Amino acid sequence: LCPRGNYDSAPKTKPVKAVLRKKFSWRDYPELEDCLIANREEYLKHSTMNYTHEQRTFNNRLTQKLLDIAKEHGYIFEDFSFVMVRDRIRCYYKSYIQSLKKKGCIVGYSARKAGLI
Image (cartoon, rainbow, N blue to C red; front, side):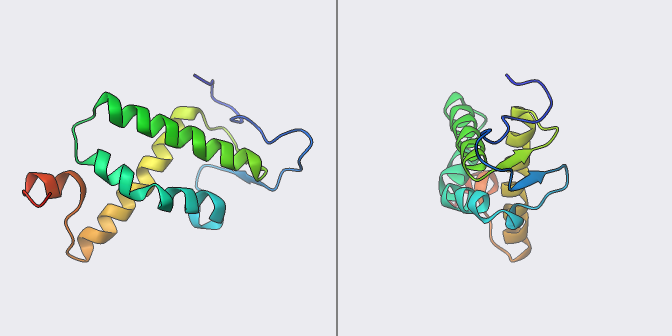
């Protein structure tokens, strides 16, 4: 994959709108968060399985889609590899699931183990 560095910088003809560093928040980049929200159901569906080839393929496609959107909007992930961006996506959904659990909802793999899905 890609070595650590500035992952797939914005197009040279388009000005850089923002540089995303280690502790960035998705909510500060609405085009990226919208992509994550639009793919949430599918991500959660895959999270109910053990890590399968299908889930890995979905995660990689989602990561690439997010990187393409970032590039299109002039965002640069500074010092991120592809895998690091994918891990940040996973953390985004993990935080979402944890917030639902605090509200008493059971989702993802836990819901499957409990026989709810």
